[in-house]
Amino acid sequence: MRVYNFSAGPAVLPEEVLKEAAAEMLDYNGTGMSVMEMSHRSKAFEEIINTAEQDLRDLMNIPDNYKVLFLQGGASQQFAMIPMNLMKNKKAAYIITGQWAKKAYQEAQNYGEAVAVASSADKTFSYIPDCSDLDIPEDADYVYICENNTIYGTKFKQLPNTKGKTLVADVSSCFLSEPVDVTKYGIIYGGVQKNIGPAGVVIVIIREDLITEDTLPGTPTMLKYKTHADNKSLYNTPPAYGIYICGKVFKWLKKMGGLEAMKERNEKKAKILYDYLDQSKLFKGTVVEKDRSLMNVPFVTGNEELDAKFVKEAKAAGFENLKGHRTVGGMRASIYNAMPIEGVEKLVEFMKKFEEENS
Ligand SMILES: *Cc1c(COP(=O)(O)O)cnc(C)c1O
Image (cartoon, rainbow, N blue to C red):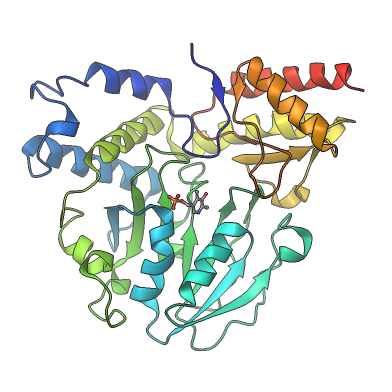
């Protein structure tokens, strides 16, 4: 029996995709082998990766002057790869809206001067700071954001004014949850295990002029964007099976009506939960209303014991992974693309019942 899985990542995938993958496990498309077993230079795999890239381009309307790279090392690898490739002036501006942004900021300090130009640390990252007029250094190579903060449940509803600098965004936990204007970014990247596929793949969408030979001295071959761009993500063996599943999720998203339709569905889904939280006398959302994420919804009762009781009883009732991040406590429901509306409706029903029983 499948549970309702509210994990922040690795996270729920569309059941349809899993069933398809299961059906193709022993014999992919008449090749007599699993995608796991085939050469990444084979015709069959070439078609898998090319189709995946094209479908992603269609979904996100990615312009021709952007490359799509399927890499490894998780989103965390990008924390180093970005400064190694982009810090020509050895300076970059970071907006600190949570732990992932902070980790990226700290990592960048190994390569140059990372300047924190804004932060919401003063209120436990429960809001997105005003980024309309930041003091961005004249010689900054880029401005860095984490667009959706997985742990704290905030989302940039408006991109920062970068004052002409290249915008770099970690979209791990909001990837493909709504339409984006790719032209506003220099790099959009994300680990796929939140909203797209199995852990082990990170997708980097990068504007071509940012792909150069001119990386920091000592940058390993594997950490140069140029290496992967020149070889269409096949410089070495890519995370082939993961890319195959991502490709299936792209097809699923197209079938669902694309990103406009996903946005509508995600808004509807999140509203069910936020509306309940807003009127509940027991549970409260922890994020400033205007900055609420559609993907990650943290909430608390204000009583740690009651939180633990809720998580335990929810689990017994088939709602898994509702415990908040270990650094913040409370609860968090991650309601990514693949979480059915019914999952959120049933969760809210369960919360209502728990509220009645515990007040
Ligand atoms: C999960 C997450 C990461 C870390 O991803 P890894 O693939 O484990 O390195 C980075 N950024 C955000 C926003 C995340 O949600």
